[in-house]
Length: 221
Image (cartoon, rainbow, N blue to C red; front, side, top):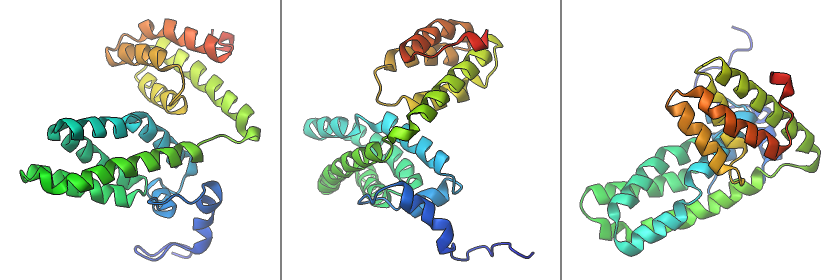
C-alpha cells in the first residue's frame, strides 16, 4: 500500500503544477479541477477544449438570437448541454448559470432567468475566447503539430480502407485539432460517410484535406 493515495485525500501541490504552467489564468475556469477530470492528462484536457470550441463556437450568437426571439426551447437545449460540458472543463460558474437557466425554463418561468441566460451567453463567449487563446500553439510546437496531422491522416486512411470502426475515433481527434480552421466542409463530408458506415466514401475528402494541409499520404499506400 506504500505510495497509494487515500481516496478523498487532497492532491499534492506538486501534481497540480503542470496545468498552472501550461495555461494562463482564465476567469471562470478552474484549471486544476479540469485537469483532475481529464485524468491529469494535459493532452486529454486540450482535446476536450478543442471539442468544446467546435461544438459551442456559435453558442453566444445562437443564445443572443434565441433570447431576442423569445425562443426558450433553444435556450433550454443549450443550457442543458452546457451544464455538463462546462463542468468537465472546470467552467463551474458557467455550469451553475446553465443549471439555473434550464431549471427556470422547465418550471415555466423563463422570464425569471432572463438575466442569467444573458450572463450565460456572455460567460460562454469569454470562456471560448480563453480556450482559443490557451490552445494557440507555440512556435516550437509547429513541427510537432504537423507531425500529429500526418500521423492522424495516415491512421484514418488505413482505418477507412479496412472498414474499421476506429475511423470514428481518429476522425473525432482530427476534427478537434482542426477546430476553427477552414476545412469544416471536408471534415463534414468525411463525418457523414463515417456516420453512414460508408468508409470508402470518406477517402476522397480525406485526400483533399491531406493536399490542403501539405501532408504526404504515400506512406499509407
